[in-house]
Image 1 (cartoon, rainbow, N blue to C red):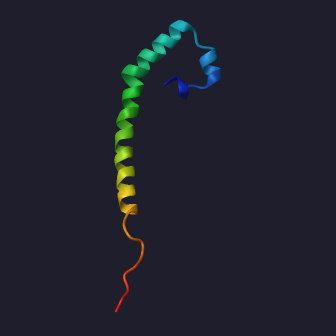
Image 2 (cartoon, rainbow, N blue to C red; image 1 turned 180 degrees about the vertical axis):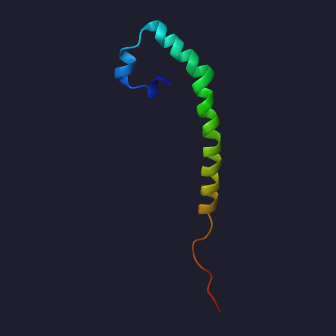
Image 3 (cartoon, helix red, strand yellow; image 1 turned 30 degrees about the horizontal axis):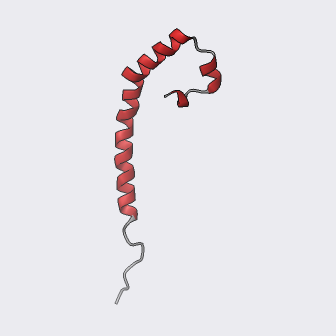
Length: 61
């Protein structure tokens, strides 16, 4: 989670604030992002499965 926080912001956070931020992330924000990520992954899987379809048009008689 800390890789998402800019280094400049991370450097100005006190130790007790880091603990509070991690708590909120683990119990609130992280869960929200996981909920948003699941539908995104499903849409992406659908797009990938549709891209496997042949792109050529069949020859017409």
